[in-house]
Image 1 (tube, rainbow, N blue to C red):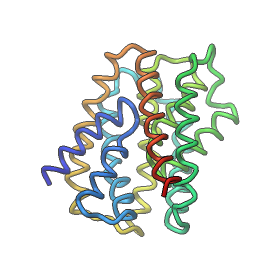
Image 2 (cartoon, rainbow, N blue to C red):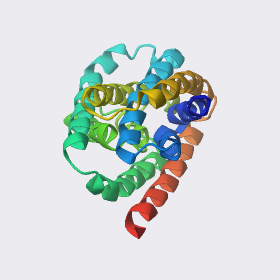
Image 3 (cartoon, one colour):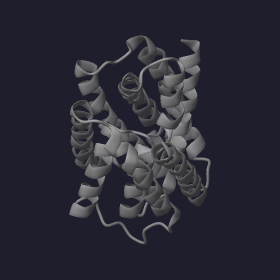
Amino acid sequence: MLGLLGVGVVAGVVSTVVSLASIVSYPALLAFGLPPLTANVTNTVALVFTGIGAAAGSRPELAGEGGRMLRLGPVAAVGGATGAFLLLVTPAETFELIAPWLIAMASLLLARPPAGRASGEHGMTARVGLFAVTIYVGYFGAAGGLMVFAVLAATFAQPAAKLNAMKNVLSGLANAVAALGFAMFGPVDWGAAVPLAAGFLLGGWTGPKIARRLPGAGLRYLAAACGLAVAIKLGWDSYAS
């Protein structure tokens, strides 16, 4: 329990700063002996608490964004539900093969200069993009927050810390809906989920304090570099085997 609590704290900080919680927590669950599917759904259930902690820790960045979150939140929630449904009824091999490419493209999108102006969340492109990446969040999860961050960065001309806070809320909603489905129908290991969730809550609350101290370009480039490293690692694991 102490080990999973510590893993959750580290992963929660990593999630809110560079959007890569599952890269820390999922392998840890496997190392503790959980089968892959059980580890995946248990991780998603526990990740809900990262979103709660991050929302609490990101209140300064989220000030004035309530209306936008209410408009985009349902899109993220439906995307997360769709991904969870697909995970429960289809094999994961297809997503494991395309995930490295999706993560790499999102990372490169983050590395480009930010948008000169906001295209607005009312645009169909923004909604479709958010829906697509939150399907991924609900289904596979690895670096899903980074992909949400990339979509937001391409859509809104906002500081990186504010985009990061919005990402935490929207990916948290997608995770929450997916977690509800997994809690009812998936093989969740609650003995592992509870201490991991407690760590996620603490790490999610701490992470925004670190993110707001990083320069905007530095936060984007750090997330992009970590995302590319993850894409290379996942690509090697998927295609070499």
